[in-house]
Image 1 (cartoon, rainbow, N blue to C red):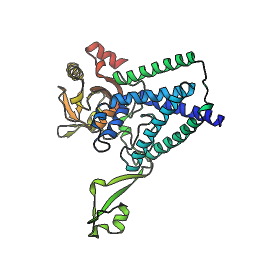
Image 2: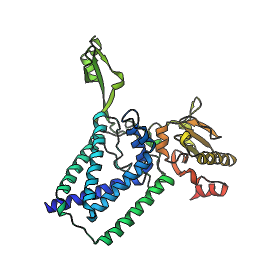
Image 3: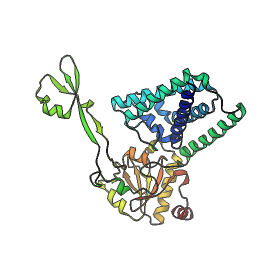
Length: 373
């Protein structure tokens, strides 16, 4: 039992630290996942949705702290009880996501590692079993170092984690795992599996049929619907709001999705991607953006205009950045840049630079520095 407990102690501790660290790099990204869970379509918890970033930061730092304490063998009762509470919470969320196909990516490891919903649930189930073993075998957990050394180590490591989270929230993530990271080719990233000669994922449409009178519901596949002529059964009707797509086999999916830039009535996506140099100001939610940031964005647009540099302002609503204003999908804009507003520079469809609004260039010298460094 002693060896099993110590093995599980290392595995669980390392996984929690890596999971927390992957999300600490980008707390805003994890807050978007929490907003999905708290949305009216799922749990309908508007108060929590409004505080998603605070909760995101708390959870990711707690994961790291518990992983560190477990490895050090410090405060084991608090650590194990907290781990149990956290893993039960995460197991519930991942099961809900997998069973109801609501949030297709739990964000367990941020953007660093994508897991299918059922994979996430299975991972949490295994961790739950390991943590239960640790809890009931906690007498075998011994501190690695003296109390003072453990305190210093945990304080230093948590200070580093907090600093990384600060950079992710107020600056830019120290590592960008997304499809719009600097150096990524958006044109290639938009190509389908068929265009690249790869196998695409396979999906199956699931219909919910309701029996008139007693409201009995059954789920059938699109194939069953056609083969069994369900539309000819007068006692049954389709509940269209419950129609869903279920992935039945994995395959290549383009990492760049819904990258469509519409300026007025014109789709300028391909034109923008083909330009040798283009500046794209982004805002996924102008109404909630910092007013100072929006003002800085307009000043940037004027600077770029003076330098005769191609510039587009993008938002879901077509917000007026005092430049060529276009519309883009809000989720895509969130993926491009966590900063609201932010800036992405493209060179022939390849992401050259990205920055948050606090670091927008204020003059020609700063602009040249941005383009040359």
